Image (tube, rainbow, N blue to C red; front, side, top):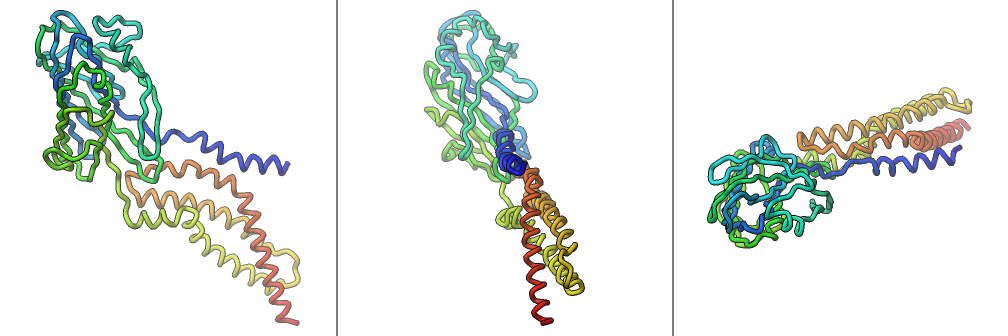
Length: 359
């Protein structure tokens, strides 16, 4: 029976680890569009405005296209998932009706080139963590319109939520826009990206390199004549206070151990006092009672330590580190046995001292 119990206790942390959710929480993902064989995108403007608490980004994207053929066609196919409000599109200033792409739909002058280059799997790397996920064809959008041969401007607007990564004590946030489909355009003319972060008062980072014009934390602009990366990433990594850094350096185990030290000293004092009065008794109830209470207080102290650190970190605390907190309660039998042995040794040491002093 003891062997079975020991096996279960050892297995619990593995079980808890296996059941933890992914640290990467997906936000809005929109990609550069796929194009039909009769449409070339000559220029792309991407304007991104971050709100005051980095919870919403408003995207306004213009595609300058050249159509080699007039008539009814589908000039662009968009991928858009988890966006807020409406995903609106205008062509030459006129609103168009967006349709979802259903598997098996015949996309005139489009389907062959789309299926030839479409990759259902994307990989997103955040720090040392890489998340694989699949694109859902139900998240593809398109519109049919009659356009003339020549130049046109397609404008897309939507609101996005950030991706979050909470593997560490703090949650890191990133807005993403996938440029990867632009690899399959007939030609890549130029790309201009304008980022407006004037409402957000904390430092941010991007993967776009040096700013062409402006200031990254107000209004900044980049100009490219080739793809800078597969993804545009705008990141906010919250900073922790000195107090939070100190608590994390102690770790929850150390904080709880420090708090428990007071109760251990009180318990040892009570053991000494009881033993001086009851020198000849074999067992000390003070030892037994304290050996049950103090390990329990130690585990409660770890719960308090998690809350203390999260409070020091503030609203950006991930809360993820407390996922395995219940594991410490399963460890209580081991804590009880270990502390009981320490208390018994101390009680035995006190008995020896008293015996020597009275001999």
